[in-house]
Length: 155
Image (cartoon, rainbow, N blue to C red; front, top):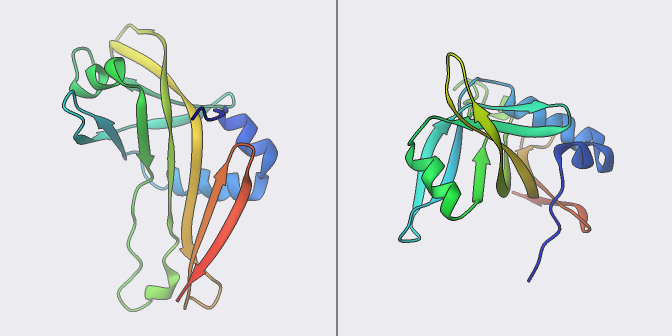
């Protein structure tokens, strides 16, 4: 089954408030997590820096990195925002996190102080997880191209 992939700009245009919350979750810290697929199909989790630039979600990979080799073989990936715990005395103040799934698209070689490969993400799914205003229910928002935004609440 073929899925429509979109740029970050298309997510922002479709659901600006949702996209702003996702971007804020990714912006809480410099370091994010990426999941790629090893040659045997098992998952690999790696630290990564990713940025929203000119309507695209972008990241780089160092020369000869395992995640770069994974993506050359199978471009499917998932990115997870930094996870920041709420204070122990205020668990309802947790600000949530976000995830983006899609495919890496090689864009160019990086040169200079940090050589490697640059990628953009063709997005297949965006998820934001947080708490409702009362802090007593988990709110899961899922956006997919052509399907729009779906919200689920869990106690």
